[in-house]
Amino acid sequence: MKIKNCKEKTISILGCGWFGLALAKQLFATGYSVNGSTTTTEKLQSLSENNINPYLINFTSETVSADKTFFEADALFICIPPKRNSTELQNFPNKIKLILEASKGKAKQVILISSTSVYGEDNKIVNENSETKPDTDSGKVVLASEQILTDFLPNNYTVIRFAGLIGPGRNPGRFFAGKRNIPNGLAPVNLIHQSDAVGIAVSILEHQAFGRIYNACSTAHPSKKDFYTKAARESGLIEPEFLNEKTSWKIVESLNVSEFLEYEFEMMI
Image: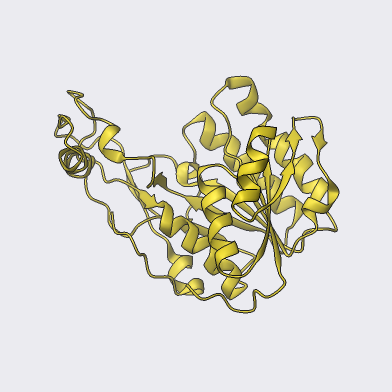
């Protein structure tokens, strides 16, 4: 992938986890200077070995402990999903608020990694123009975090809503392998491979296409039964058994990805 005008540009990635690290590696490979953060000292060396400028950053709902130079970047990606712990889950929006305050006047652009869980399961097709109606606790706090970003940058907020992420280390064949009587087997899946998740994020930089929301989801939507049964079979695992029913579902469309990024998915689900 060739990147336009990336010379001497610096990108900061807050949260070099499964997605953030993959993004950081791709950005370095295409000519960017990359700052990456971790909350553990053990991972600093790993970031350095991958040519990522390492920063130790710790944040709570009340404080952010970070070297301010981390936020001095052409673009800041916030890649920290909310944790499942109920207390930390509810504190997530406050963390986002403090991070945005720390980046004020330093980061030229801010991109928040969000989730298609903000739409809920309303038995319909949804896109970036659809009403958000989360039906899970994580979806609700992610949507609250989006609102904090839009309030903070009302004219220039950028949000990427990822569908379910699969790829290296996340073999979908293992998700339901060997299980029986799994409900909602005919519901469509909404997934995206790590390579496309990274590709879309990089394309936003390439096209300087900031200031809007992007749904990032494969254009293919096989049923849960078909997709996960095939994935288990191809992995040599015990095939799951689903109930032939379609009780709650959604199909996530990515209108802005095709319109503003001209991005073509590399990995079809």
